[in-house]
Length: 200
Image 1 (tube, one colour):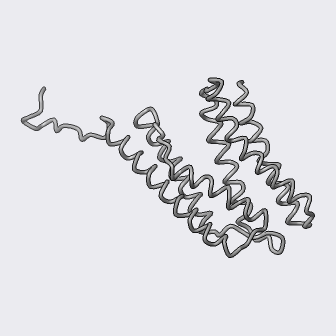
Image 2 (cartoon, rainbow, N blue to C red):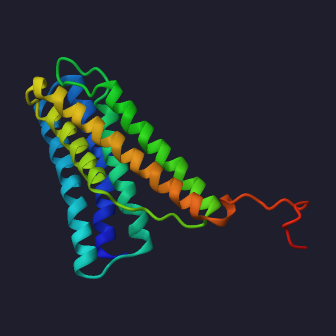
Image 3 (cartoon, rainbow, N blue to C red):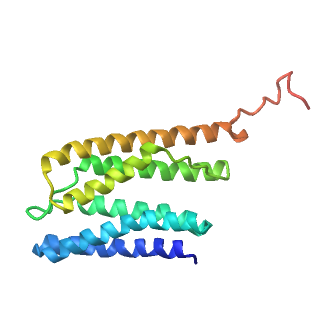
């Protein structure tokens, strides 16, 4: 259990705290709950960079960290997006359902693709791309934007850009996954046993 992994586990533990504080705030409107929700979400987002830096700086990369780190990212973002997709008026704005569907659809597609590649090829090679990192940052910004109650007129443009980057990153994942599957021998057509060119 490295220091980097402990920080990642802290990020995971902050997620239910964030969700509960959002729900408490939307029920009674007490500002202390909104502040605690913002602080917990921001702290979890900051720890995302901290654990990565610690793992690289002190050579603490591990198989457990390779699993926990992206899991913590997905849990944090999905929890924030989903809990803010409901109608919390008049206390908070909401994430458009089409953005929630885009994010959830992409993640489900990636999960199915990874399971398929793991089953067919035996090893999944994930190639991080800039657009995927941008999409992750924008999703975090959307959550914080709503929690901070900033201008809703700007939120519409932000959600549109977020959906576009999320969709493009999903297409890249599909492209990379297709290439991994097509490069594996199991995807090649089997030779016809009755063909004269086949060897016995």
